[in-house]
Length: 463
Figure: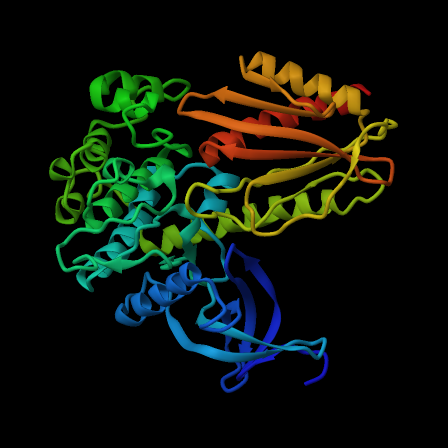
């Protein structure tokens, strides 16, 4: 049909998101009228890079083997389809039609509305465990469990998604061990960093422990599960001090003894010392006071509405052309450490000086590494703010050969961030600050940028 994109019996409505290897579209199944999420990879079996094709096929195989209310459902697959674009061009694609999860990610809820209280956290953590347990019972390990891959359905039940890194629990060779180093580093178990053969079941449960800590704290327990990581080393060698440091700026007794025991057991260095799924399910903390499912769904619906409202306000700021307020980000949650942040922008009305600035290059989608902020502050003023902020953070700053670029390594409570900031001339009297995260945990990056944004906001008010 002219003006409408279509592939097979799916009519494309709009784009939902994009990653490094695929785009996700909202589509309508013309046979049933049902909305679906259509993951589309451009190309065919011969032209798509093997590693991307392998991820797609892993996801198909995993989801075809598992049927559980807390796992996204797969409806249809075609590895040799033709996509008819609304511009009239046709091209080959591989697609997976999946259940549409319209209420977003757990990540967004935590980022925009904060941590969960224990009674609601127990409800949703049990749903996560039920989904993961079903995967393991079906002989599948996920290997990329994180809040970005946990979504909500229309009733605000959790759904585990993105099985591109899934593998047989028994291992490719039937030995019971896996060997590939992949996933998202903040959630990886120690044995993966050590490049040792590992149990997929054990690393999944380790990631669940990281997620549980974030549910209760809104920040991770450590940067990476390596002994060189300050907080994970404290967790292993001075556990009481680890919990004392995490309890700073929190009410007395914030972390209960039962919670500490559960986390200590889930995040142990040795897989042999970690809790099994059955032990986690029987733990005193998980069996404490919990909301009813209905009450938990109502609270999540309220939180989701709040998160959507905040995101809408960000979009409105970004649309104010004369102040160029706002930011742009890629799709959330790139795996293998390339996670992205989401922030609100700054605005102001002072004149800019763009002499010596490079012209702003086009945004490259799918990198999940940088954020752009637009402002009317003068370039020299922005650089002064950046350097003062980094000096206050005791950052290790590396001078660049470019006048309006700075590179820095910032030590945080949990790890270190390696980032760079560069100024560009937008061409309409405003300046874009492009902040790039080269390395480090996502939550620390978000926290750092929120602080920097506040500095810019104050400068705007003063000017």
